[in-house]
Image 1 (tube, rainbow, N blue to C red):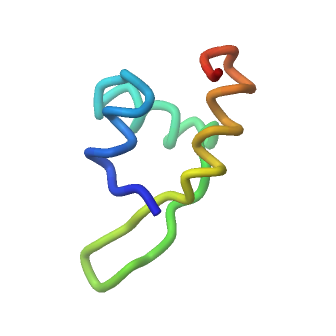
Image 2 (image 1 turned 60 degrees about the vertical axis):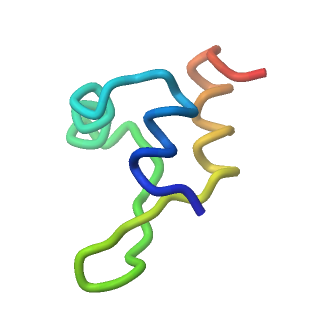
Length: 56
């Protein structure tokens, strides 16, 4: 499970660019971890990066 700071580091993208992808519904779904916390499955972020041609 990755938090936003980890997603930023892994993708090399800014938070604002990630939020643009999210608002365009072109980003993996977030998972509620608590009342004010969300995370992302690492394997979904990896697959998304591969789809963009930015993965390994």
